[in-house]
Image 1: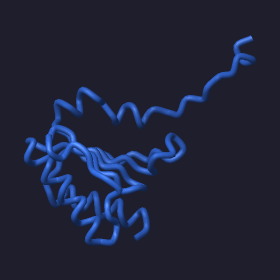
Image 2: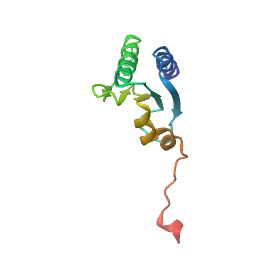
Image 3: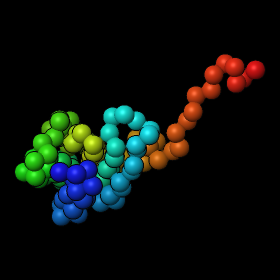
Image 4: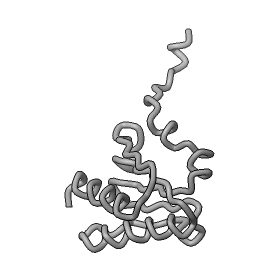
Length: 118
């Protein structure tokens, strides 16, 4: 499955599951961990869990088994690692606190060497 198809599958599943405030952030060139961060909110612990589990199930069913999941048991913040896509599903209060959109949408910072300071 192509990365774009997987991204569409994830977003479609989030919409089907009535996830809120879906954001797709292209992080290529900012991290080697993944190509896209997708962030969405659930309305309750149970909703967050259901969203993450359904995305993982549908991805696996499409031939893209998740590399791993985290936080599904707790339900405040669940992460599904689909290799080229990392999905974060959070309760709104957790999402506001960590503000991942702001972190990953910021321009990449180029480190300055000591010679540039002289």
